[in-house]
Image (cartoon, rainbow, N blue to C red; front, side, top):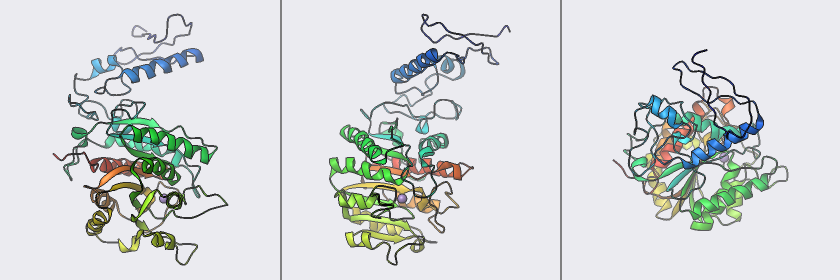
Length: 392
Ligand SMILES: [Mn+2]
């Protein structure tokens, strides 16, 4: 037991039971603590550490570990922007699981763009599980690196980005969750920050767009989905994941002539299911009109449709075919391919994008993790097409 060490991270005044802990190299590691009171203290200690963490440090690793195991000054570029750590210097799965292992901060102050989770799935109509989307997308995002070699975008050389955590949703009250989401996004918009949202079911886009339109006025919308999500009610309720864009129209949040819905498919209850959207002026692009085609020409038309004014991107992962993205609650066969998803997002480059979301990842229906991995990469692609991002 010569290598047994103790590490006390609590205030000395707190009486506690210390458990021994060892590592192969004899380095001290935090021990499991038996008392609830000290656990609380440790959580506070960790939070204080994260708040005080400079923008160039990796969240979740202590100074001791940094000094022991890594070369110094390799966490970031040394420049003025946050940068994800490189797996050349930091083991991919080391550290706390923020999006791309970016620094965590509590608010959007000082950020050009922020990743934010909305772990809500009480608006789902079929398989639940999207409440776990943000955590799994963050976990799989450890594979996403800092440069986009296909588009030559360098977001982390151009803009300040961080993970600002999750909206504290109310799982037992959907309208109250919508209120909480709207209030959280009002603060993000007030900070002049572009939100990149990790959903969550598609209900969340309604309160997000309430906050976005409050700042920018009615926005254009690039909506990728298997479903149009413009239903009026279900089971007598006006708010669930099948109605967000109907509610947005009701509230005047959309510039309806600048809305495109891409990937719609599946069986329907009506013989003319997309009539409502078309009547508003939406462009509706069926999945079967995308099969076996490049979507680059479509996106040229979409850029003309969107013009210079603000645009929001809402990407429901079920827009993809279930072979690419089975981890979702309402899958439909014969959807878009992953390369087509990239063509759509990359085709948004140059638009005045004011917010993006990636919704409906329900990880437990895809044990491979590939749906969440795809979502993490699509969110990176969205980051790469934001207005202030430069090419290298
Ligand atoms: Mn949807």
